[in-house]
Image (cartoon, rainbow, N blue to C red):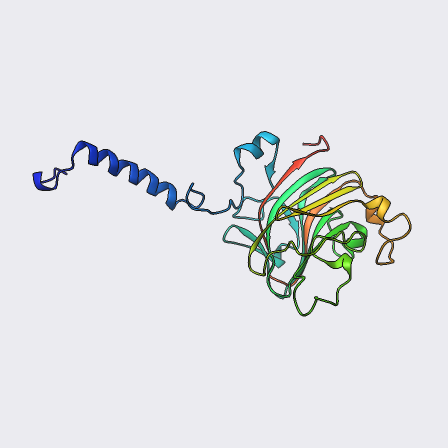
Length: 245
């Protein structure tokens, strides 16, 4: 459309307008350089791609996941445990040694778990596999009541996590889990809260006094162990360290 001379743009102003339009399109995207938004679903940084990370969740469906799919939903780019529905959701693939990165949002009073080297079934998977606790530590239901090995990030029943790194309820937390053999390291929001050898930690018995045959399992599924709290997980990606594809 031709503009009336009164409204025509000078070449300099035209260039400036183009710059603002491009910048505006970047700002308007979910992960634009000024948006401040965290990646959800399948997005990986160039550095993570170079390191060998791959997404475990596409941000839209539960493709690649199995188990209690009726107890989980996909909302706003996150896997959400359906409130009042308990259930276990597992990766279809099995993993041995790896680096797992994900964001987790813990609502008030929440209780869930991250399954490590687990069988894909129901039951006491903190015993048959390994569970990293997901918990609202500051809830009146939990604070001052739970055992040290029940704090968020703990290797449940075996290694207590250092408390205090979890953000207030309703905020996203960045969590990284590195598993190499018997060595478990958990970093939450930049703070190392677990760094331990589970075989060494349990050689004289576990903290919860129970048998944990899962500590000897070297390969299994990853998953989420829901108790009906609407915990959310997003930006889930993994780097294998075991050489498997």
